[in-house]
Length: 326
Image (cartoon, rainbow, N blue to C red):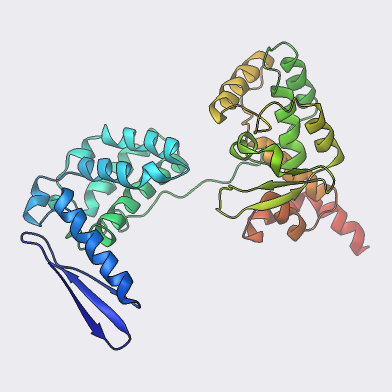
């Protein structure tokens, strides 16, 4: 049962169930304390909020990941990608380990093995999901886990960030390859990416209602960092929008996967293998600096919350800075 005691200016809640660890939280308002107590008791009664220490002998990493998938990932915007990552993790032998016997060494071995077959960035994403799953299990589900075994290991270092740009003639090659495709939106989305610096997901979710032709702006309500932003549109970007049919709520009524597949086929058609669609964003940001835009101005467009992330682009303007110093 739940007990609520007032201590100074807060309400201290304890929820006890036989065979379960005691769960405690504090609230400023008694109404919040009452609501949390009822919700917590309901969760325990419905499915058991947390296994006991002895039950962890039979509760595996895979069980934890499956619960994390259904209760956390299912409500995230990135659920498709994270679901795919978790499916990979569930196929690994590490998923069969009982939580009662999990140690950092298990995940060190997992890290060292995976480093031989996947990129550092891929492995970091896998480890981040595992680490967050253990954090949720301890902080939100009150699992009797006294350390996060994934947090205790060193994550693989990332290599140098990609700085691939379009080489001379490559854009023309890509657009010529588009002319041989029945994917009518492909040349437009390529050019629009270069004009705006938008991410693939931002473009396929962009809506006509968020475009202001009068102000030449586009509101991006859902972004990678969670903060909506409004970007200015160049005259070329405006022209591209005016050329598109306006038959749907979305500007590009397609999926991100459709863009990925069309891009892969296009690269194969024109013989450019090492160019990622995301490299078009790098191309756009580089061009913004070459136009003379400042770091804050480019950050407004690109959505980088930390301007230091843009410093790697500023070397492109070194010659211009040198001219100013003469």
